[in-house]
Image (tube, rainbow, N blue to C red; front, side, top):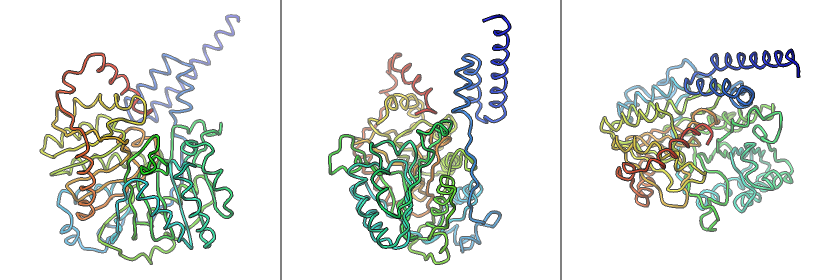
Length: 476
């Protein structure tokens, strides 16, 4: 290779580095992320540039299908006066209500009923029974829907729904689809009339740049009347009575009421994005027919690396700032950035009792050590840390002042807060909060309380190991 060829190659490489660096500076709002990517591009020009082009650029742009209530005062949409709402919600959480509306201009739906369901042992039979009784529509979205003993439970129910005349649509994430082999599509494609879509198929070369952006949402909406919403996948690990090899405990919610309209709209968006075939769901079309079922005020909060970026994280921050007495967090993965850690410390120093329940043993290699890197800091702020006994706890719950509940698909980590498509349900209801508090208390009773001394004496080698693995936070 002559000097001219080397010069041209060097010029092209420098041009690539400058182009990629300019893109990072223009589009990366997170300073540590921008610095990290820039350093990689200049220290490893070819590998760094290619990695950023494939994984660092957000290419997901979606035209949202929104309920048209922007700019309308939330008080008129709830159907109650300001005094009536204030009487049912503690004053500090009234600020949280306002924050929520500014973060995502979607009104609270009043008169819902939520029932927590524990593990697949309780949830899956209820889901299958409701699906089998469907006569109009079944909408299913999930990150993982395995073709195992759990997934096979749903096949007869789906067949029955189709026989009843129901329109059945299943939307499974492209990465989660491959957690079982053969996958669930192989099993349901024989059901004539069932429509199946994959969110960004991971094995497609075209979708390689999107491989880090996953649809982590989990919801089932049946006939526009009953929904199942939360963070529980469909996997035999959730069927504890079968004694699976990798058992998982989890919590999801059976939901009835007007909030189903918001869930259905979100499913419509995801389905249209994947299939390019828009449709109008039963729950959305018949929104005016929804009746008040019970007393829970609720709304759906979507999040993702598109127009909904950072909404769930902002709500978590706001809730910690508004908390007056208590804040309980149950999450399988706890790797938030410094803003969340600081908010937790500040709330604890204000006198708020902070309880964080994490799995004693994670299902991801290195996750336990990475999470432990933040333990000393949290314990120093008198935050109560608990390690839940096995089986692995996949529950996702955030409860503030025993009134405000935030639950859904999002974990407390960078992947959920910034990369995945997630959805949580926000609820104001002391009665529902009390039911969830009882679930949390049962978990705490079976957990190990983490002592400050456990991490005061941590060896240098273990500290280095934990802090090194914490650097992988965005990629777990």
